[in-house]
Amino acid sequence: MQTTHLPRLDLRRLIILLAMLSGLIILGISFYASYKVQRDSLIGSTLAANRAYASKLADGTEGFFRTAQQQLAVSAESIAARFPDINVLNAEARRLQRQTDSFNAVVITSAQGVVMSTAPDTGLLVGRKLDSPGARQALAERKPLISSPYISALGTLVVLISQPIVADDGTYLGYIGGVIYLRERNILHSMLGEHFYQDGSYLYAVDQSRRLLYHPKPKRLGTVVAENEVIDRVLLGESGSLRVVNSQGVDMLAGYAASPAAGWGIVAQRPTADTLQPLDNLMLKVVRQTAPLALLTLLCIWGLATLITRPLSQLAQRASEMDAPNSAERIQRIRSWYFEAAQLKRALQLGINLLHQRIGKLNLDAQTDPLTGLYNRRGLTLALEMLGSEGRSFAVIALDIDHFKRINDTHGHDIGDTVIRQMAGLMRTCSRDADILCRSGGEEFLMLLPNTTLDAAHLVAERLRTGVELEQIPVVGHITVSLGIAVWPLHASAIERVLKLADAALYRAKQQGRNRSEIAEPDQCSPADLKPGA
Image (cartoon, rainbow, N blue to C red; front, side, top):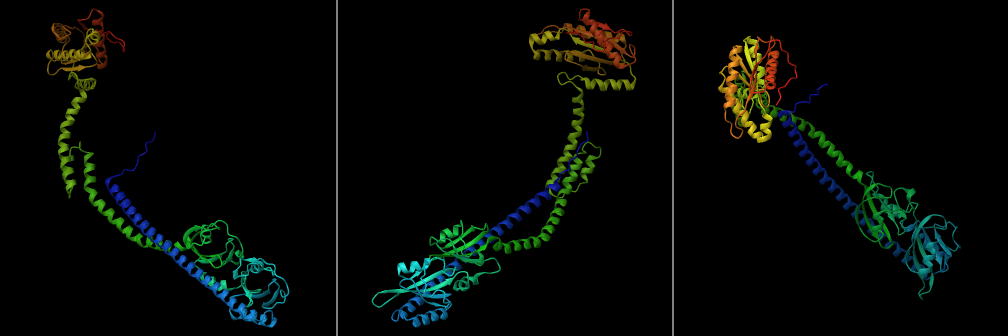
């Protein structure tokens, strides 16, 4: 199976990464905070400007209606004394229509609503009785009125501003009305159309029925606007500003104000995207201008990180080679120019000395049994390899504590451990310094006696057996051992075979009553899996 090696993440990369991340976070926070503040300020100023402009135009619209009504009132008073003189009526209608651009047309009717004069004079309406909503309202209420938009007798969308004509004795004679054609050039275009700019800003006006009376797109005139919170508020007579998604689904910054005289609402608005576009462009320009400085800063960070981490990197490399013979000299050559690196260098130098001391101890611990201090199987293997490489003959004594399982079951494992430790002590007493003593299993032991004859090995085995039998062990009392003896290369040419022969002799001692020593037979071949019984 192929091993995938991940790239090493060292201190230099960590410092660079941390510095870059910190810089990017600070830059991002600063950039976002700056953008947010300017964005909110821009939106707020646009809302305030649109509100102010809508209020100004609403006041202008209100002033226009008052002026128009005043003009109509003067005309109504001047013609009341000579009503229904057609010449007087025609002259006054023409004067009123031509004198100002307030009205697209002027109409004068009788008390029954019959048209008596119009300007301009088309001859289409004179003598006809008007039955339009504006005419009916003017005749019914007989007071100054501004009608809601309606379709006139000529089929155009109009608004009628009317003034009653009353005789000196209070008799109602009819009305004089100024007509504004909403789909043609009119006074509203002059007042409201000047606000339309190329930046997306525009104005519109609505009446109480949510019908558009003015809009920069002529096709939308006369249409009824669906849900729109700005229109809801302005038709309640409120003035203010609001960010809203309009009926066309466009995010708008709207200012609004009401014109009470006609019940109209004036709204000045600009798409939010168009408002923020200059700011977005500015922020992109800032990013482009700061990019070279950010790159230069990154290079400085990289250089400083390399300078700072070089001693630590070298120390880390040498730390991985502390067991090398010349590791102390290589660490000494490292230039630790700041406090932390110097402290680490000093600690590594101390650590090398301790390491070499502990390596020897660890090697010993790895080869010895922690309970008895005798060699374990690893130590036994190394000893056999050494004896085999030297070609020295040696005797093997395999021994086993008789009925050790009964001791554990009767007295517990702690007492069993005491017995094993005492057994190891007796083995030391009966051996030489050059002899190799091993604990090969739970209650199984081996003695390797270099340069020892078979007879001498047998005497050692008997001395040990007798010493064990006579030893008084607390709680347990007396124990016995069984032993098997073999000599290399006397009994076999292979060391492994000699160990098996000694083990087979031990098994035979167990079979013949325990507490005895048996010598292996050179031609005897025990099964590989033969183990002494408990």
